[in-house]
Image 1 (cartoon, rainbow, N blue to C red):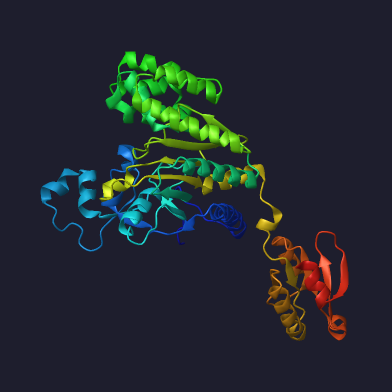
Image 2: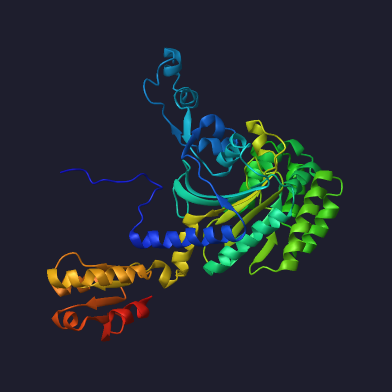
Length: 453
């Protein structure tokens, strides 16, 4: 007996109904991106490892899926290297490509490669899958979609404001209550300065970014393991646990970071974003959260993260400013800021809250029952007219028992069924049955298209 097939852990199949739901998510996000003047691009699923490595920190590099070279990938390796069993070294020798970890680094590569074709500021969006060799768990997958929007070639903080409006608009359309969390890497750098650990900024941000997941005690333990002094850890506690309104937090931070020019610049940027959004007005709450660090090395200014309020799940959107990312590809001085919607987590949130509109997930609206060759021939031109009016319709392909055809309609939640027999053909009409109420009426083809269109 053949072994039952399976798929890799952290990946999923999607049924037709699930795909309808996912397309609702993608279409909603795409519509909002268009509303704000963003244009779509796509990049390859695989990139050169030289493009990806070193852009996500040590932890991110470990999560890259590497693609084995084709052909004799052992060629050029010495026996000593093979016997060393050094996985990282060997991978660097026979893996030149990897699956993309996110869409931001490939986008930076795209900007550098196509700089002569781009008009700045360049506002792009991208909806494609990414891959991470992570440990699969609820809400965390090895293959998942991101829906990114980025602006490059502009230093203006109005870009940050607009991206927060996009986030707010998307989740308002979904009907999901969220909290938009904001921080600034300059503020975090300033904090590292004033506690006397400026050179440990990456270690500090990676650790405190895990506060929600592992708790304060474990964050402090990780900081100790990274060589952060006890005195610095003690000074850090009241800062990362700071409470109050956004304005109160910023006022306190001005005093705490008075000796840090970088920190004060971060406060200035954050104040502008929050005050501008306050004047515009958002549907959802926005909160200054000093524990938000987004442990990716390329963020340099504002950073964002979105949490669903009515579902226990991780971040469903994130992003930030990355002023120096294109510099590693030989194009310094190009500022960028972007956001990324986690489509797979949003899918789970909308499922749990049952927020999909019926019209978004329903497929076929009208099914023609097949009573035989003559009846089917009569139905086909009508079917063409109905489809021409934008109504999703189909005819059952086989003239089987009506019970089986009605069961098909019920299984696919088709709301209307068209019945055509001898009487209907003689009168040039169809009998339309409402599957929800059971009511049916003999109507003309024109009435049919008007009623369903």
